Image (cartoon, rainbow, N blue to C red; front, side):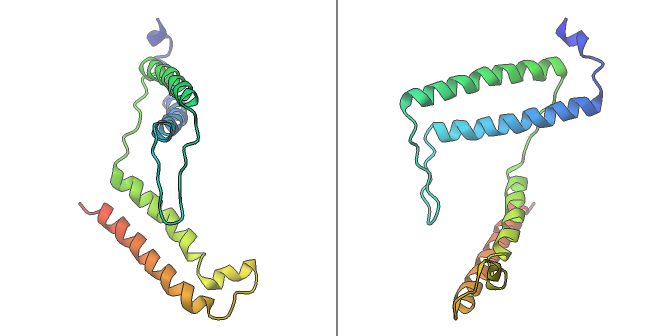
Length: 144
């Protein structure tokens, strides 16, 4: 009965619901990776999992409950979901990073206060090299 009840749902409404629920599901996937112990330690970024085993189990259990609801909604409302290709994900992140990195060049940092003598000579070439690296990662990810 649920399926026939919602057969007349408009396409715009369906897409609106789907967009929100896909965003939720994507974040649940991220939570799951974090809770299961994805620990990253890089040059400036470190993830520390301070959750107890009880907290981990409880969060994973709640994720499963939510996913069951999402599955029912998908089936009942005939939602398609989204398939994200890794190349598009990397390209999207690189696009966002480019703007942040450009604003780390010394001429933009002046909005935070006077920059010390020699900072631009030291920092700008390194930021330029990082931007080139991000552009390269983006280009490699988008090769077909």
